[in-house]
Image 1: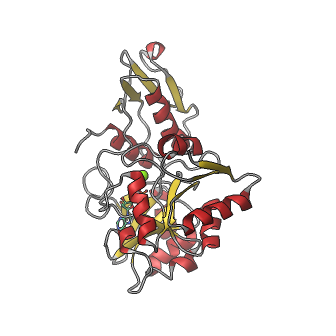
Image 2 (image 1 turned 180 degrees about the vertical axis):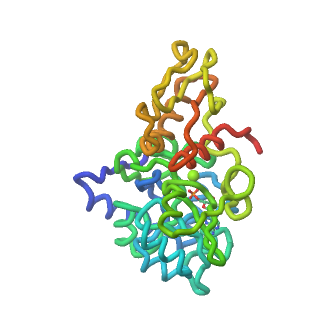
Length: 326
Ligand code: AMP
Ligand code: MG
């Protein structure tokens, strides 16, 4: 089983242990404000290969490279003025920018799936400190088996990957709870590749520009090859926009409106009784896991407003509900 080191009280030990594992080209599970990441040296092909192996992740799916700060990011990628101002405004934080690689960038092509761009983000808290101490960027997808629900606690990571990794750093539950917003700036226009922890409205307010959403539903297929339709998949069938619960279903509810049939539900789980989207995002993945663990055949989810963090929540729920094997 993996060694689990809590940050609280053992911060120094956690950093040292993580650097020990990273230096051997092995991945470490680390807390970030979004979800737990499975991190490895983004400049070392053996280290990156071990991420793909551990997750069972398809290699055409590029990894987000995590940096300590903007200065470090500028060593590896080329920033246009809009991307730089977004970085200055939202880093550290749950925003990923897809940027052209510098010609001699030390990021290994395995991390970018051979693209001439790289997805970069500066995480808050422990992860940023670890990267600064390590001195190199960390490629880090979510610390779960590919296609499964992203982990928001060290215990989720341990239950899924504990027998495949050496070390989990325990920073408690993730504050944001959904993955980063991914943007790409091109010709002075901002395109949304994936909704996430920074609401689109906040980006528009900060830049005065309209963020272009992918055509059709969901996330841009070509730009973000990893955003497969079926993802975050629980075992149970997920039914969205439910206004009633069917026999045998577990209910995930947003707000406190009574739901038809909820007395017979296999479980009633609350995303946010007060209707707070931030609280709902933080609870989302944990409740999907919990609903699944009830053994219910189905999970009914009540409607969630599609603004602010609701856009990221609905995106993840749609993937959880998508037909499998596509
Ligand atoms: P995650 O699974 O949260 O680590 O996010 C990885 C996702 O970031 C990938 O599946 C892509 O959708 C996106 N991404 C990372 N790098 C790039 C890139 N260079 N170009 C486009 N999308 C990227
Ligand atoms: Mg993931």
